[in-house]
Amino acid sequence: SICSAEENEGAAVRPVSYWNEIRPLMQASCQGCHQPAKAKGDYILTDVKRLIAGGESGEAVVFPGKPGDSFLLEQITPDENGKAEMPPRDKALHETEIALIKRWIAEGAVDDTPENAFQKYDMENPPVYLEAPIVTSMDYSPDGALLAVAGFHEVLLHKADGSGLVARLVGLSERVESVSFSPDGTMLAVTGGLPGRMGEVQVWDVSKKALKISVPVTYDTVYGVAWSPDSKLVSFGCSDNTLRAVQVSDGKQVLFMGGHNDWVLDSVFSRDGKQVISVGRDMTAKHTEVETERLIDNLTSITPGELKGGIAAVAGHPSKDEVLVGGSDGQPQVFRLKRQTARKIGDNANVVRKFPRMPGRIWDLAFNGDGKKAAAVSSLNGAGTITIYHSDYDSGIPGDIKNIFNKTPSGAEKQKLEGYWAREVKVLHSIDVPDTEMFSLAFAPDGKTLAAAGADGRVRFIEVETGKLQGDFLPVEIGEAKVVSQREDGKKKPLNRKRGKRAELSERKI
Image (tube, rainbow, N blue to C red; front, side):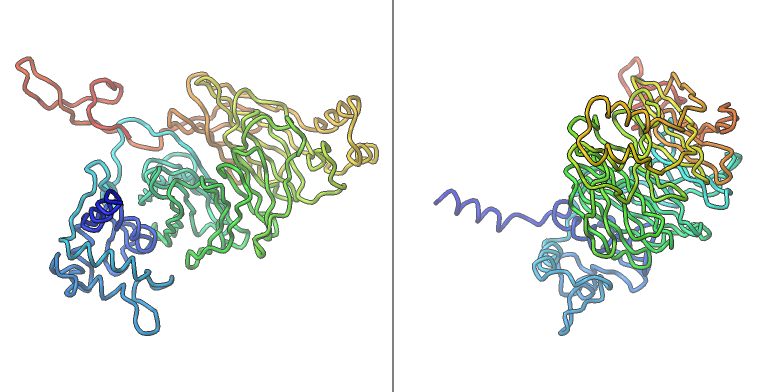
C-alpha cells in the first residue's frame, strides 16, 4: 500500500538512535569490560563522549561522520576467520549490528541520551546521600571482618561492628538487589541493574577493591545472587522468569532454567554444588541440576491453596540437604531436597518443618552457622519484625507420618501433619520495629550477632542469645544539598538544606 511504502521510506531515512539502538548493543556486548569500574585498555563505552575519545590506543572515532577512519569499526569487524578484537570472549557482532554502528558514525555519531540518563557516579565520584537508602541486602565476610551493605549505585564495605567504612564499590547498577561474599572470602558478588534497561551481575575482588567481572543480562534488574561452594559459579534470578548461573572466571553463562512462571527472586546452591534451588513470585521453589540445566522437581506443594503468595527468599541449611523459604504468607518453611515418598496430589511431603508465622511478608531469612537457629525479617503496613527461631530439629520421617504422605490425607491426618511440622521449632525472640519496614538480615559467622536493616537505612545489631539490640549505625554519610528556591522578587537563589526538608529539595534524593 501507499501508506506502507511511505512508512518504509521514512524508516530507511530515519537517523540511527544511539540511545535506542547503539547503546543496547554496547551494553550487551562491551560494557562488561569497558566501564568506569573496569576500563579495559582505558576505554569506556558507557557514554558517547568517552566512546569517541577511545582509550590507550587513541581516539576510537577519529572523525564522526567518517566510519572508515574509526578505530572502533576496525576493532569490531571480524577477520576472515570470523573473529574480532572486540568482543574478545564472545562471538563477533552480527554484520547487521556492525552496519548499524557504521551508519551511526557516518551520520555524525549523534548523542541522543536523555539528560536524566547520563551516568553520574563511579569510583572517583561516588553518590552523595541526602537521606539514607533502603538496605535491600547485607552479608558478612566469612572471616567476620567485614559487613557488605547494599546502597545506591554501590556496595558499602564496613568493619563488621559498624565502626568504620572500609571501601565503596561503585558500579554501573543504580539499584543493588543482593550482595554475597564468596565462600573463600576473596570476592563479593552483586546483582542489580538499571530498572527497565539492564540487569547486571558484578563480581568484585575484595582485597583489591576492584571489579573482577561485570555481566550484563536481560533488560531489567536481577536478584538473589548465590555462590557455588567452590567459589567458581554464581547463580541469580531474573524478571524474565529465568534462573541463571555464570562462571566467575569469564562471565560465561553455564545454567539457564526457564521453568518459573513469574520473577525469580532468590537462589541458593545445594551443599555439594550440583544443584540450585530457586524461588519466585510464582509460589514455587524449584530444584535444578547445574550440569544438565534440567529442572528436577518442585519442592513446594502442588496442593491448591497450600502456599498463599510468592516466595521472596531461600537459604540453605549448613549441614542438611534442606532449604528454608519465606514469602508473602509470612511463614518460614523448611523443605528437603530429596523426595522420600512417591508424589501424591496434596501430599506436601517435602516439607520438613513449618515455623510460627510472622506478620506481613517475609523478605529475607537465614540459618546461623550450625543450623540450630534461624532468623527472618518481615514487613506490614510500614512496620517491621525481626524473628529469631530455634531450629534444632530431627529431619527423619516417622512411619505413621510417612504412611500419611503415601496417600491423600484426610482432615484428621492433615491436623496430625501440621503437628509434626511444628515440632521442635519455636520463636526465641521477636523484635518489633514499629517505625520502619525490614528487608534484609545476616548472621555474623560466629552466630552471636544478627544484623538487620530496612527502609530507614539503619543497620541494627541484635544479640542472638538474648534478642537485645546491641547498637545500630548508618552505613552512609548524609550530606547537604544545594537547592534552588524562589525569592520574593521571583528570582532563584541557592539555599543549603539539611536532610529532612523533603518538600524544599529540588534535587532527586538518593
